[in-house]
Amino acid sequence: MYILRICPEVGLAAQNYKCAECKRLITNKSAWSEPRRCDYTGLYYCPACHWGSRVVLPARVLHNWDFEEQGVSRQAKQFLALMRNKPVLDLEKLNPHLFKFVEELSTVKKLREDILLMKRYLGTCRAAQETRMLRQLEERQHFVENSHMYSLQDLVDAESGVLVTYLQKVHQCFSEHIKTSCLVCQGKGYICEICDVSDIIFPFDGGVVVCDGCSTVLHHLCYTNRGSKCPRCVRQEARRRQETTGDRVVVSRR
Image (cartoon, rainbow, N blue to C red; front, side, top):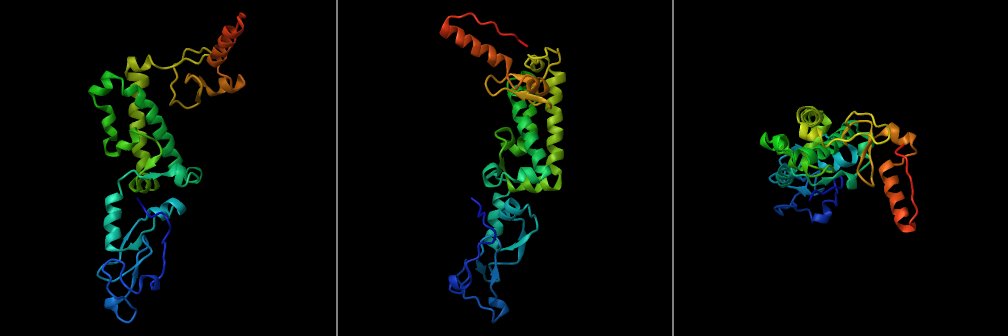
């Protein structure tokens, strides 16, 4: 797992003036033994173990959305390179405020949530399976498993705009299949029970709300105008009261 404190320095004295890796004595008296601090570990290294390589650090990205490269030891560089594509950063736990202040990241989060909803349709669709549609996310397999885990590379690509463009193309492809090309997927859509307009709506559409109780999909405007009450849940509650009391209850769909 990453060190997620920004440059957690302890001081050269705490290392007994020795390189954190090879334990060679390091002082400021000679260029051959000059101490070099690693911004990732906060420790000091000799020139043989710290070549001055610079990389993007996860702690600075998470806490400050800072992608400026910092000097790190050879050992830290190898570790960070190994970890760069691994989805081990749970932004919802580590720094959920990023989604409020970084527009690109907020867009990525919404696209990922939509893609997970689309997966429910594509995962059971024979046509989508035959064309291996979900393989479009093969390089970022975690995107079809959850919406909250990120790799450092994901965050770098989010900041540059590359990730948003990539996900928008995938989102459009999946959406066109479900809503336009595939009759089977279309048949799994919803009609708003409040307005009864014949337009088919899906959980990943804009301007809709998914009921927490029964998972039905309604127009957001219809839902709020009705007092944020789901008609299906209201009917189910009325039936439960009827079964309990034995009274006949009539519930309007509107």
